[in-house]
Length: 249
Image 1 (tube, rainbow, N blue to C red):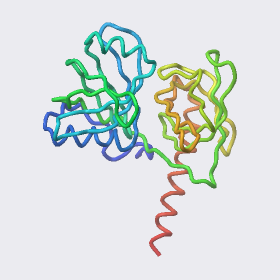
Image 2 (image 1 turned 90 degrees about the vertical axis):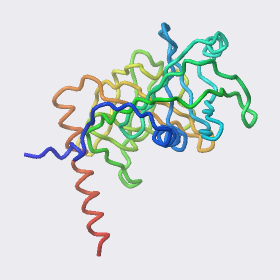
Image 3 (image 1 turned 180 degrees about the vertical axis):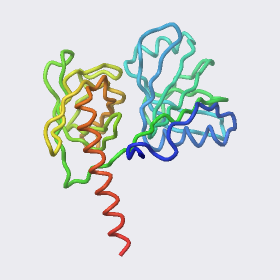
Image 4 (image 1 turned 90 degrees about the horizontal axis):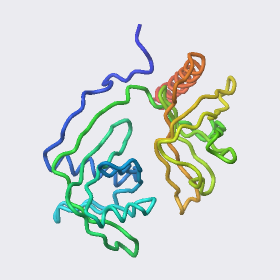
């Protein structure tokens, strides 16, 4: 029996991209979609967040946004090598920067110039159908846990069998930490509330929209919770297919 939550192409083995065309194309995807970068320095446990501001193939240059927390700048000034990891639509993209970066300004904001990597690790890992929610299908969510002073309320944007994307009003980044597990995530699904621990994978505050976008991965779900999620994803998938079919006529 086929599994409706597995895409036909499924997860792929990791690849190492070495051609400039492939590398630049993947870096530009991260830039255009404003996907957050997770930065770690060799032999240090702390994690930092940044973004790709620009990919300049002519100058063989990558411009990175100011890293948060800004402790990272001290390590950059020391010339310490670092590793970058990002996720775009289920694909893990990672590379290393072993050369010293140039600390500079770009359009009035702090940034870092570093060379375009000569190789990038690319791993298509997601094998679960990701269902988008329409405005009429609003699902309320709440993120809570021992690490939070108070719960953060928002809405569900999309969901798969392995995780989901959330939207919170205003700047909800204070007190939240990527990589942290929050044991009290609750989603008000149409057939009842579902509560499970989640790991916060990325976090971004959009100042123009005054909105925070978060991506979480379900963490150690029980069988009951997994079935609730799969039921909801299947329902959304079926409705999306019906909508597509109706649009043909």
